[in-house]
Length: 532
Image 1 (tube, one colour):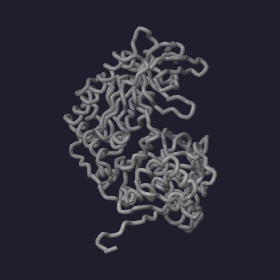
Image 2: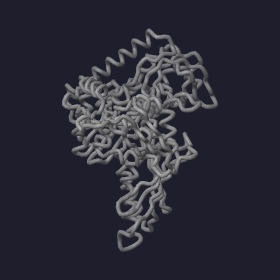
Image 3: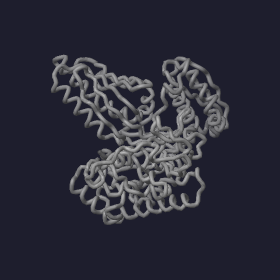
Image 4: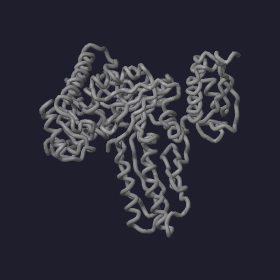
């Protein structure tokens, strides 16, 4: 589903410590991409790597890609063509994947680029029975060179998660060399448009080319698609050239900057404004949009001192993502609690809104499903999510809530699988994260957090204080009252940002101040016309 008419895409790239790209409508966040400078990502980058170890017990291999720690490559992410030692890494990556499992692997990470043809005979090797599942030792040996793409960044002591099914994503198209046929996003439902795009892809690249039309391709003519396809071909030629002339391990393609990737993912026909608060980011996006043939998209430059998210009334929604309790209309609420194993979402009732307990439960549950889907999307929750709805006795009411949640989750660009809503009021679904997600409490527990439960909340509050100080060019000094944890972030990770203001900043620890909303008191310069 596309964005509603009148949606705005807000790019907050003014602050070097953090970049936020938000899809919003009428002051309400609909989707979000978030990156922090110190958490630079390699997701999507291509590397020419060397297999250093093959672990039969794990059915996986470890690959040196030049990151210091070897990357993890599971057998399910290994192209079967690599079993032929005569094929070099580049030639193997170009071979069509002959089995349904390989096609699903190829399409699995980009929900927006999935194709229903994965279950057809053509995707299963022409209707023949699939061969016996290969073991990792049948496919790889130590010393083998492989072309891999990063699926997930290194985490703690673990290396990056890798795949040999590489893809190059544009705004409207995704090139997957190993797919071996054109396809159309599942999210495009109009059968006539699907057929038009499929025929267009065959005209552009041939019936044997692994080119996928994304949802942004809807209604686009041949000229616009051709321009993007030529750009993807140039990128692949660049990869091929670097593979031939680089000594492994080596990075052979860097993914687009996060701000460009985020705009490509979130920009669709419903977006009427693209607002950017940083000149360098605006220039970068204008260049990227022109390269993608999106000349009709106008980048609106925001130059006011007031932070962009506050000017668009989005900051309140952003700060709410760090709180476990999310209010619903009428006094009800949902509570989101993340653990190591899963994320629990509890629906809490409010005042009665109907004549009976059953009708009230149904009304609150139906009101909760939209917010649950939105929060899961905005917080980029991954893994198992268990929703505890208010108990309902009638089976038809449970089916109604179950259908409503599934429909709400369709707006998510991530890959999801849902179960049924049981008699105990529990419904489970799984979701693959699109990015790194917001900071997790399990990653940085805080002792003295003043109730927030995580350092990430203090970091968000500290960034808000920095933004407010930057928005006061006439101040000669600042006095900041904030939670102890927030003050600690301003003295530590954000100390350079505070120093760069070039004005004295006094920090006062105050447990009564919200961790997300520190008090910034500027000492303003005297008005030259006042006579003082």
